[in-house]
Structures are given as structure tokens and as C-alpha cells.
Image 1 (cartoon, helix red, strand yellow):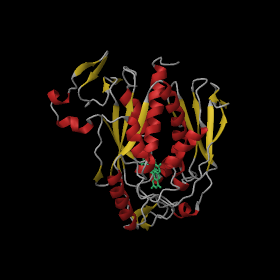
Image 2: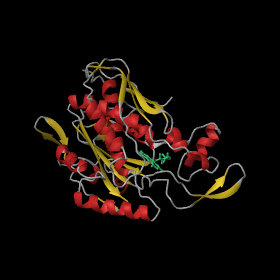
Image 3: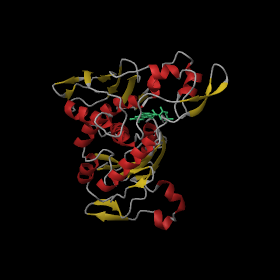
Image 4: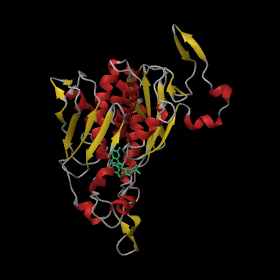
Length: 361
Ligand SMILES: Cc1cc2nc3c(=O)[nH]c(=O)nc-3n(C[C@H](O)[C@H](O)[C@H](O)COP(=O)(O)O)c2cc1C
């Protein structure tokens, strides 16, 4: 079963080219406001339509909540929500049935599930499955906001174009800039450079990846379950469920390996009556528990697997080598669409651990 969580559980259903995709969400506290316009707004952020740079696939992604909601509030029963798959074109995938696309799940999925698996559009491995994650994450964020927790994800780099971010900037200001451009960049000038890089990759029949950073402010101290369900383990667990994520790091992350203890240790001080740290190399986590400092992590998104150039593969029926051209409609860079997905899964993992830790209202 495609399910995550213990107290706030999210179960995904559907597939890329089936009738629908969606989620069942168990454990939404009774009375939680569920603002459909806000949910739809979050879904629109991961949708390609309206984005100049993305796939030409036209998906209205109109959200329907089937259960668990009355008069704008959660009933305490399971919430079921879905969107219909309205722009489905299976033909390009039929042609590739026996020639797995490089960079996609086709080959291992075919071996694991056999010829009957419907891998059109990537089937259950598709980025389209993140519709349910974003809708569930939107609800999780409403609960978190009532606890004073705010989450913002943004693009830190696309291809070779990086963005510098001031970690002390208030999240509201950061969010406003991130939402103001197509690539989710906090820096408008860099956003244009990123757009140009993506367009150049598209023209070359190629694709680009990038890094998304996420900051969660207002997280109470001590969230996380020792030992295996630490905040890092749970976040990594759900972040790696997002298709195309290849790496996760917290705080100074891989750079920690080159630092000395004297440099890496974050010194404590009193900030009024709360304990804070002068630096945040730990990314807001010590011993798998939150420290009360901003929770900061980054994910690496690989370059889109579907590129329009001819590629080498194998024919699984004839046992010969083959060349394929992946048709269909694909984004030359999925980083901009994945920003809201990262924000959403962070909210799901956080609220689940907070409810487990007794932060229930
Ligand atoms: C929101 C989103 C949209 C995606 N769209 C595409 C796409 O248009 N073309 C593509 O090749 N991959 C796309 N992907 C990534 C693939 O689904 C993914 O790379 C593939 O299923 C293999 O899984 P893996 O990269 O996690 O190993 C998308 C991912 C996300 C999160």
C-alpha cells in the first residue's frame, strides 16, 4: 500500500493515466479548517498549465473532496480527495512497451510487476502521483499554521545557475518573491537566467535538474521520535518518495564533512527567554530532534528523464539493443513544479511527528 505516516496518515491512490489520482488522509484533527480555494491554489503551483517552460500536457487538476469535510471543516473521519486525469494519451507509451525508457522506472517495474503493469505516463511512478501529496500537504500546513509553524521551499539552483539566500530573512518576504516567478527562485534576476537555461536545454533536446531548499520556522523544540523515526529519517523517507529526488541534506549537509567541530558546532545563547544558536549548521536538528531553530534541508532533483533526443536502450522481447525517441509531453526541468511538493511533504512529516509527540490540540 502506498501509505506514509502513523498519526497523520496519507495513502495515495490512482495512477498517471488511470481515471484519477488522489489521497486518503487519516488523522486530520476534527474541526481543522479545510479551505478548498487554498488547496486548489497549491495544486495549481505543481501543475504545468500556465507555465511557459513546462510540458504542454493540459491538466485542469480540479480538486474534488469526496469525504471527511463538512462546512469547510474536517469531520475527524478520513478525508478523501481526488482529481480526474483528463488529458491522457497512452499511445506514445504503448510504442515503448518493450523498450524501457532510460531514467524511468520502466525496466525494474516491468521485471517486478510483469507485462500487466500499466506504465503509461509512468503509472504509479509518475510525478502525477504528487497531486495527492500536495493536497494532503496543504491540509497539513493548515494544522501547522495554527501551531505557528510556517514552511517555504524555493529553488536554490537550476543547472549551473545558483541563488544565494539570506537565512535570516522573514519567511513571508521570501515566500512573496518565490511565488512571483515561474521557477520558484527567491531572486528575480536569477529567475530569468534559470528560465533561459531551461529554454536552451529544451532547444537542445535535453533537460536540467536542480536543488530545492526548504525552511520551516516556528517548529517546537523536541519534535522527532528516537531512534529510527528521527525528524531527519521521517523527512528523508517522504522526500525520497517524490519522483526524481536523488539526494537530501540537512543544514550544512555534505559540507559538514569538511568542517571542524569548532566551526560546525552551533553555539547556544539566550534570545530573551528562549534558547537559540548563533549559527545553524545543524539545520535545526540535534539527535534527530528539532532544536527550535529553523529546520533547513535541501533536495537534489535529477534532470528530467524524458528528453527528445534519441537514446540507447534494449528490446526486452527480442533481446537486442534498440534506440528510442521518447515522445509524449515532458518538462525540460521539473524543479519549479517540485517546489510545492517538497513544501507539502515536509508539512506531512512534521504534523505526523508533532501529533505523535502529543502536540494534538
Ligand atoms: C511534479 C513532477 C513532475 C514530473 N514530470 C516528469 C516529466 O514530465 N517527465 C519525466 O521524465 N519525469 C518527470 N518526473 C520525474 C519522474 O516521474 C521520475 O524521474 C521517474 O518516475 C523515475 O523515478 P526516479 O527518478 O525517482 O528514479 C516528474 C516528477 C515530479 C515530482
